[in-house]
Length: 202
Length: 202
Image (tube, rainbow over all chains, first blue to last red; front, side, top):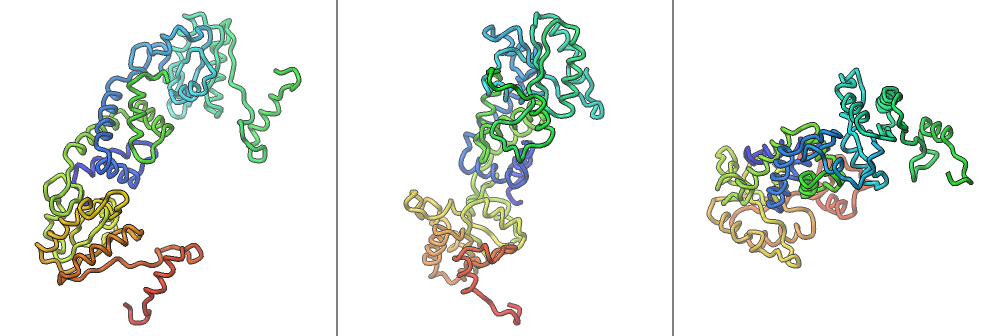
């Protein structure tokens, strides 16, 4: 390259970011060095701080700086409802929709025995003890609508079915803004079988 | 967000990268924290090292760790030819095409008086002294084929015209792999006026 080892190493290191290939990494490197050195330093500190300080919440397994994350500590949240998701990014998406105000439990992925992810690997025992300890009234299964996600939801529902709390699953159906002509058959089937009467506002 | 200040700061800091918005920054943050902490640390060190150590070559103005960059020191390169580009990324593109083996001079952009970039701002005086000092035989103007790039090339050609060296400009014409039906008029005009006889292999 002729730019020397320091720049080459930065280009290489940027490729750890998802979606960043050789060309984007070069463009980012030159942008930072030519136009935004303070931004590069800020990013370096932020990365170091995050890699060092961020662990998992002991209660919900979400990424957190503290032993118990701020969402688990927040008394303004509904203590009776727990929403089970597959990953912190799913939690983030739900939080950004501002609809749900209960607690979460973040699994470490979905059940996938072929990939070596059984109940212990994704943290099911912790979920069970969490549900048994606290007086939860509703468990919302918000795993992904994929084969693994469905299997995980089913497994958890079976496992916790003896508890007295209500176990629900997020509704399947048409996405907002989608066009019927482009919707896949599985989704249409779900939309038909889950259809609701219109006039009684349910 | 509920992820705490350390994660929020990392998401914000990642947005200094060109082409990275809020959603990509979130995805990068969660990817690094969940799957690649060592990659995050490596990136932090690389950024810090680069922001600290990288300056500009005193001879060609390219980004460099040393006072004189490795390309300017490399005696295997052709001393007689100098290629003038607008930015380090242009130099990188030329280097990656493995055709040119002379020296470079990297301007700090193109002339654009309305944006406050005159000859002094982009380093023309340094270019003039560099050309006068060394026995350069050919100056290749490789500024971009834009209005500013053409103006910059024209300005440099006028300025250095009294020297005895040859001054050339990169050829304008059709891009490899392009389709005539989609080529713009300006490029077609250049391709016609720069047409070459076929049989004498020139």
